[in-house]
Image 1 (cartoon, helix red, strand yellow):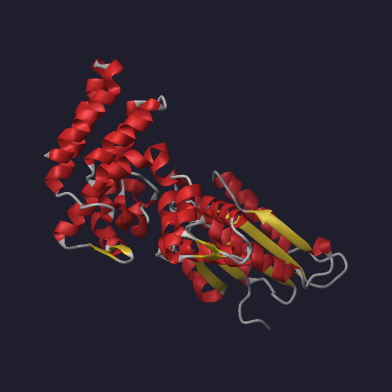
Image 2 (cartoon, rainbow, N blue to C red; image 1 turned 135 degrees about the horizontal axis):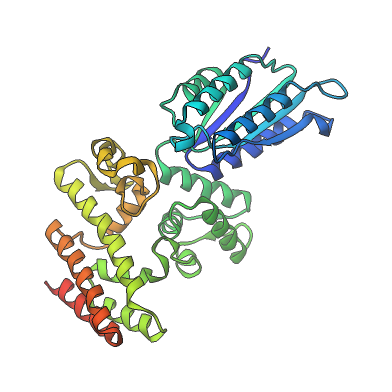
Length: 363
């Protein structure tokens, strides 16, 4: 009898979890000749009633006997009710999860192979801990998002028959951010651009990959935080020449400055430092500030430094000389003042931002 009664794959990134789930299910299904003995069920639930429906369907499936005898394989995918969410925390959901556990304990893996994929998962709860001890358990990604994403890039490039430089990988993640689906699509695009067996270089990424992580105003923010006034003024000129508006530029500057304020505070306190892997100490410092971000602490947010990719944050902070905390706070006030001024002078938006940039970068 197999050592594990079922397979459980989980992680923070649903794309990575589903990707591995497809591979495992394909391998399991290849051993089953009868296509009616292979079943894929959705575990996605928006409320407690849908949790109950998903678990009942799963129960019916694993308790069904194969029409022609032999083994069955069942995949319960996209499970989201194990997360730290309103639905996941509900007492009724917790009771249903206990029922799911009891059901899994009765499964004979010689008769039914079961695969469960779930993202995200609150690993503090009893059920995931039980799965970790009982199942063929895989945690996808772990705590290092940058390393996990870099692994996806390398694996995808290898699958497509090309190589990618380490610097190209880092720049790709900096430009795209922690969007796994988009990262994979960009690797496909870059692979199609070069010859088979060739290498994706940093120059290819710089030329072909859009700056999704910073929006359409990447150049202005990059120039501003590099401390280069001439480049900043030139970027503003290009932006407004193309018919751009001041408000999204201010928003992009505020977003990055807000993160840099938190970075500078952590560095000044000695809780983090800039290193080769980004902002070292970011995850270790997170529990100390969790209560400051309320219930949204685990959600991806431009306001919360601890939900950001550590390598990417380090890239932002080290792209130029990181200003001191006083300068960063003054920047934020300048952005607010500029926004108020363009309301009063809507026809002088470029001039307002040029004056703001000059004050900030010559202070």
